[in-house]
Image 1 (cartoon, rainbow, N blue to C red):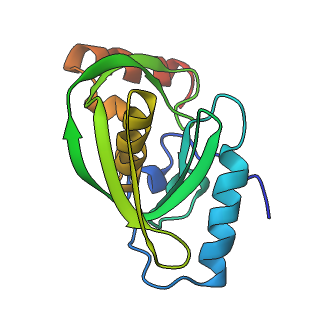
Image 2 (cartoon, one colour):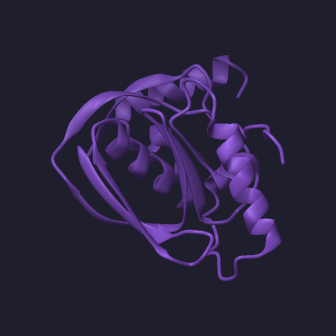
Image 3 (tube, rainbow, N blue to C red):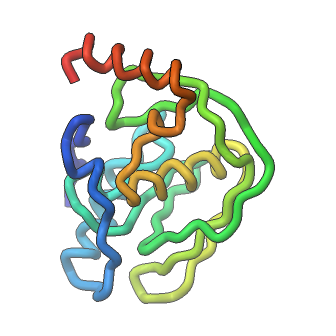
Length: 161
């Protein structure tokens, strides 16, 4: 399969909600392989399908040495609060303090159609929320406070994005 190029803002695929996967086809299996190979790089915590140009509800993750994926993820529960640095492969070089729930639980399916539940706090909780946001057509700077978001957008413009 392949390590895929990462789409960056303002690519419209990043602002388009992704479609639910209704059939596990060979193309979906290839997508999962590409997601896993592309996220398996130091410093990468998660990668959504639209970040590699595919508008389907799927993401991969690479947290604390654990590599995995989920299809059709839906956030079921969040609790607590964390406020910390967040970055994104689709917004290279931008790191901003972002408010998220500390804990998140996501339910989806695997390539066999079996149910998957992913959950965690800290970095895992942040990643689950971040990737589900991507699949809904949002990037993390949408969650920043107004003045900070304005600063982030200015930084994007100065980078030519």
